Amino acid sequence: MPYIQFDGPVLSKEKKAELVEEFTKVSREVLNMPEQAFTVIIRENESDNVGVGGKLLSELHK
Image (cartoon, rainbow, N blue to C red; front, side, top):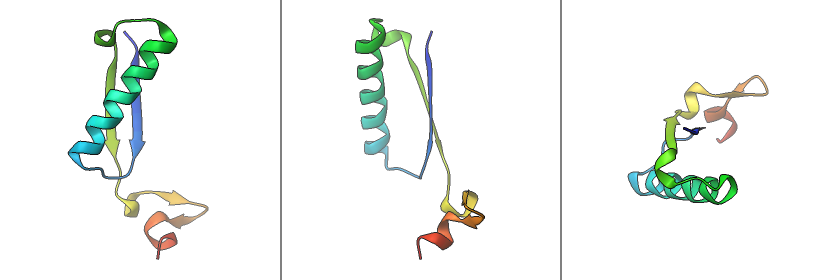
């Protein structure tokens, strides 16, 4: 059973549903497996919890 994990920003329920649908659709097409075979996990990260180039992401977006 394929497992897809997405780490990214905090998203609305609608955006999460869209991601799950699209990840599943593309994976089904590429791997030629039924949609029910895929599990998608979304892990949301606040920008204060992500560092890029030695700086917090929240500081870089100011």
